[in-house]
Length: 309
Image 1 (cartoon, rainbow, N blue to C red):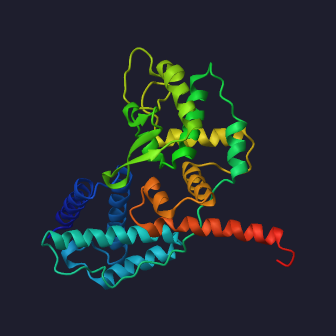
Image 2: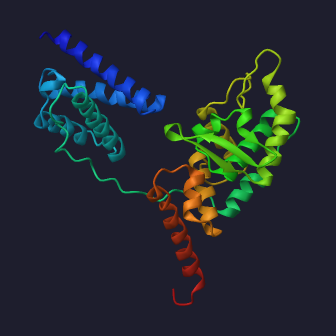
Image 3: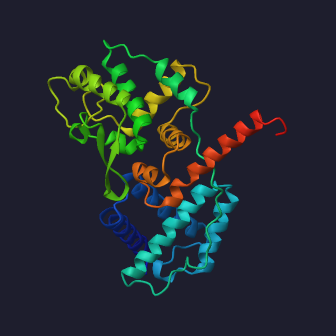
């Protein structure tokens, strides 16, 4: 088979694989794009190591190890390397599912071990500083919106994609709940505190109509200055600017606010199972990392307080 035909075969199977991930695994557009890039890089590595690109059906574990060695030499972060191997492994697993392979050449290749770092969270005092030192100017619709975003993050622990995806109908201000569409298309109901409800109410009643304007109507809860749905990148930029204005000596991200929500709830005695439900974790082990954060805090208190610590 000519090289062009082999490349076309690869492109065809990669396209089918990422379509499968989207349709049946409900992966995000970001994951779809990343996996497609990881498989395209595999083609480049194959061209570098074996001087030609073999058909997917003829790939061996030894050939893949040669490609892997190239990645190790590039000093790639282990997290990035692990994701690439997951993409490769999943691709060959898909080919088996489609009857194109009898065994997965990735089955004997181990992913690198990744140390699980503790999530970073603001202290309760730091969170109060962020909120209290940024009183919104109610004449500026963007400032009212930004305050509502931070209050909702801290009150609910939502992922940034979940918050950006909220529509007006997802927020029940009377009962103090938001309906969230999480990972894998799973829906959950998350309680929201009084302070967040007040901020969201002010935003919806006074600021959102100004941002929405007369020409564009959208169901999105949080809007940008053009009246469209605020993106995850837009939310990240808002938090970065707020951190600068409040002179916090650390970078603020949506994930940090999610971690702060979880850590402060556990510090206050929240049940781990209840926290799992609120965060939308499918596995309790994912939620349990926050118990280590609280343990670290207890250790700090002990070292500061005990005379012989």
